[in-house]
Structure formats: structure tokens, C-alpha cells
Image 1 (cartoon, rainbow, N blue to C red):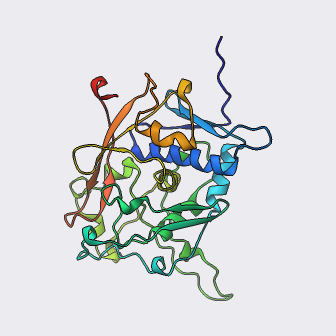
Image 2 (cartoon, helix red, strand yellow):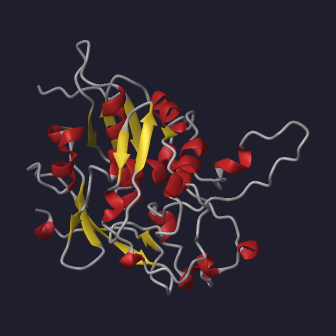
Image 3 (cartoon, rainbow, N blue to C red):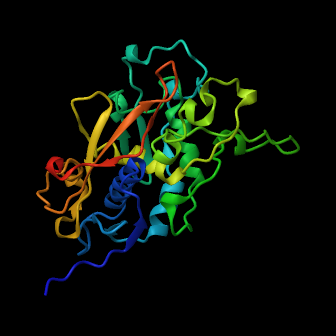
Length: 295
């Protein structure tokens, strides 16, 4: 009788939510770097199983989330400015310089996958470092269902050290990257009744984000890119099963359905424009690929 490894991390996942899917890839990515193949332990490996993502590694879910919460990013003068979400005149298609994001602790990772502007959902004028930092600090390590953690996320600058006796600054809500399809599906102007990003700051209303999804999807997409289709901003990705469980270096093959797993399930999503200026995008809910398109 065939036996399967016992996972040390299990999270609930909706595979039709591309943000959750790529966040799972990010969870494996961080686990692989935190607990490499040493002292008799095998490298981290993971698989999807009936609405759950399972990782066998040398740590626990709380360990993983606690490390993510305290991640440190390298400072970059090009990323220190405030978000320019109201810069409606920017033509992102003409932006040729991509400022990478450097994680320096507790692991070292360079993130720059958003050179593919068709896959990138946030506007070029938005500060990727400050968004990532806010999402990390909002992570609750004790949440047993992290991909469903939902809250208003605030800018880290609002909670920075305050001179003794001075009044703390008013917390400023932080917009997410828009990987999570629950946010994306309701981010279009026709859904909300107005275009949130084009409002003046004083009229903007705080909206809930999913910080674990937003940060780990940002991390996961560095290695785990979806398969482009013939249509712009439309992508496919695939889950894989226990019989074909994979380690982080194999994620590019797994995500594109190239493991040879006969039970792999394919999904297609759109990185859709959500404003008339066509600079803000959001990942939309994915649809299951027909059986004829699974391979």
C-alpha cells in the first residue's frame, strides 16, 4: 500500500482565486528557503488536495507566517516616495525602468517579475515596497486560515516611532496589489457604482484586503509564472496532486501543467483593467479549463 508524506502545513485554498493559488506558491517558496535540505530533512515539497494546500517541511504554519510578518526589505531611494495613485496622466506602457524589490531578512530574494506589465496589476506610480511592507506587518501568525484573513491594512509609516509627547499620525489605509480575486471581482467601477482609485483622497473609503494573499502572491510569482494565452492579459495555471508533489525549483513546470499529472486541474483568469485610464488592473476569478484544454 502506497503511503504519502505527512504535511506540516495545511491551508484552505480556493483554486479559482488566482491570488490564493500564487500565494500557495509563495508559501512553498518561503518554506523552501527557511528550511532547506539539511540535517537529514528533505527539501520542502507541496501539493493540492481537495481544497487544501499541503506543505511538508521543517516548520509549522505559525513559524512561516511569523517569519513573513517580520520580513525586512532593502531601502531604495526610487521606492521611498508616496504612492501616486491619482496620477492619471501616466502611461504605464512607456515605463521602461523596473525597480526591483529586495528581501534581505530572514531570507534573501530579489523580486522583479513585474517587468511583464501584462501580469502586473498595480499602477507604475504606486510604491511596491510600501505596499509589501504593509501587507507583511498585517499578517496574523496565529490565524489558522491565513488565506482568508481579511481586514483594512494600514501604512506602516502611520505606526512608526513617534517622538515622546507628540501626537501619533492618523493611520492611513493601504491599497493592496489586487492579486486577490475577491477584491478584484468587486473592484470594477460598474460593481462599486464609482471608480474608487479616481476619487480624491479625502473621499476614499477604506476597503478590506487579504494581506497574506497579497504578500505571498507577490513572492510566489517571481518563480511561478502562469502560462500566457493568445489573448493579452489572459493566463492559465494548474494545480497538482499528491502523486506529483513538487519542490520549489519545479514550480515553473507545475504551474504550467507540465508535470505530467493526469489529475492536474487547469484554470484561466484575466488581469482586467478596473479604471478607464487602463493603468489599474486586478486579478479576476478564474474559470476551470475544459478537459480538452487541460494539457
